Image (cartoon, rainbow, N blue to C red; front, side, top):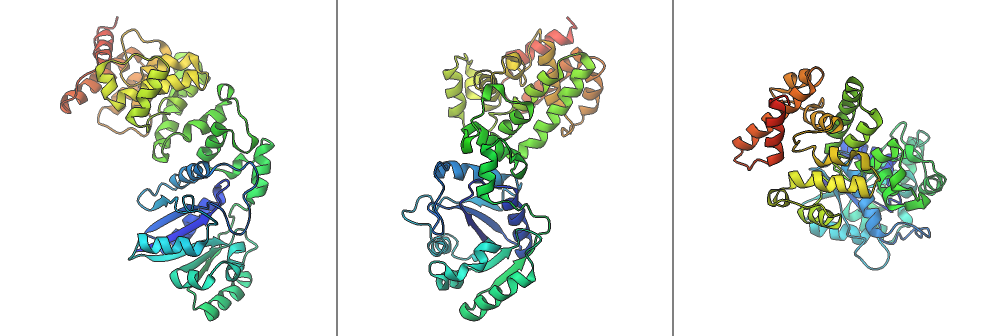
Length: 396
């Protein structure tokens, strides 16, 4: 099994890191790609005011998740828990114990590669792992790599692979932090990482979470879910906007509802309950026991109390169950969530037709489909779904 170890301060992790990791994983045929945020980097001090170790770990986890390779990628906190400077030789020793049958490869950029012989115990490093170095810009070329590759091979018997990545995002962490503090730099970051930075007010961003632009709200929401959910959230947003235009609802409001509707989807059961308790949301026994129902309650609470979105509270609150006598916004989010373009089930074509010709009929059909699914799975039906079915089936 080939294992790539990609270390760094990741302060913050940016698109260049991800492009390099993806290219190295493909070039080496890696079975596992392990990101290792440094605790105390040996070659430089972390700048004053840097995020904490757990915050850098969280950003790196979010960034790695954007690669959509859950069976391959991992973020390892070995250096954050180790006292003293984060020497690569010690990390590789731990990695060899953790993956005793693994073939280790150390991934690094040009600058690190050219100074590798000056690191702490380079002989141990090169005895334990091969090296894959990647160019951070188009200026990096074979002329830069070749002398160091030859030197390491001859001096240490090193296994070295070098790759160039044309068009790779080329920005230093120092410059990126300065741009973020000045209100710029977001184009160098995955949206979800930028959203985490806004949520945690890192690098001097200091965003008011209750007054975010639509673009910033989107990033913040993306930072709270796994990347595999983003296609659904984007699809739901665009469907909600189309439905708003068709039925005369406020498009901006529907976009915000769709952006936030699943923001707590991946919280633990205990976290859902804690949010509902904190914000006084009364839960019925079925809701208290069911995460699929709970995420609508906790998501609505955060939308209102953390993000200041009072006007979409009910739409998010009932987007899973529906209910009798729904507002226009509630209907639109419920249907958009149900039949956005990524959904694929036998009845979805008819549901889409109804959504643009008979909105109440579409809600009734959605409730009917939900009831059928619950019966087939032997699950208890929520009374609001039954109420929606009866209300919209009768056309009242």
